[in-house]
Image 1 (cartoon, rainbow, N blue to C red):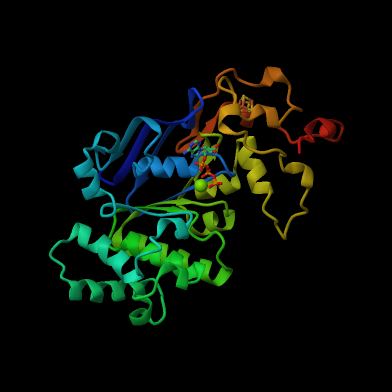
Image 2 (image 1 turned 90 degrees about the vertical axis):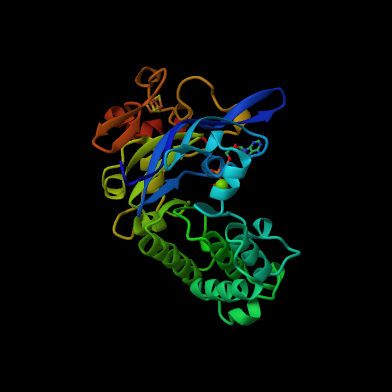
Length: 337
Ligand SMILES: Nc1ncnc2c1ncn2[C@@H]1O[C@H](COP(=O)(O)OP(=O)(O)OP(=O)(O)O)[C@@H](O)[C@H]1O
Ligand code: SF4
Ligand SMILES: [Mg+2]
């Protein structure tokens, strides 16, 4: 219990589209412990960023219901002043897109300095500059004394990403949410940034939510993994279990999509199709079953729920008992792309 940093219970985050609300995060429950990396994977549109924004309470036009307990305190019910104390200090986020997250009109130094000053008013200008340069050093930015006075557009994508990380770690957060922190960066920079996140976990005993499409990153970084599909968690397990014994068909398909040099890759074993858009998601029953039309209707549950099939291993529905990838004669039906 002591170790629990974040506990999310039955979270719903819904967006208004035309006359109705649609849940982009639909009854999600999970926990993050100190000194733990929880990876969240799932294809585009599955609700990963919507979940991250809800935890930080950054959505301004969404309806959020449920409980997000950060060290026992419900983020959803926090007053704005309390939220401003917690956000950027105790919990911080690295955003998916550094260009939109950084202010184009402020220098790197001013932006990191502002993040520091917000939570420590005693820091004078000179102390802030020293601390900013130290942070730039920590995130591996060369010539920090020079970069401190540059604007975001003067920096490369990798450097901007590091600036965002510097802002996120400036107040030693206990919970860090990293939303696709390495997408669009080249492999060397990716490795360095992941290393930084790993250090943060070790040095600061932080809990980390790492959102990524990259299963290689998951294998390398995560302690536990939640797989999301269309707003729901379809599988949750520790990283070894998930890679060695995946159960939900969506997880199995995701894992099959990673080229494996040791195995003959069979294209049929990757399920075709995409996550339907929010307004078109089925509101009743399983959101995934349309993507596996070769399975008989009678095998699907009317209202699939997440069940713990082994300690710590949760799978939505009973898929794992009867799922198979399409046989040759079922292939035509499965060609949804
Ligand atoms: N502000 C919004 N208003 C309406 N719909 C939204 C809004 N933000 C997200 N959505 C919808 O919610 C769903 C989940 O989006 P989200 O950005 O969380 O996906 P994601 O898993 O982060 O995808 P990606 O991997 O592409 O970043 C999508 O259908 C998206 O179109
Ligand atoms: S078996 Fe259950 S979870 Fe799997 S596709 Fe069918 S209804 Fe969905
Ligand atoms: Mg996203």
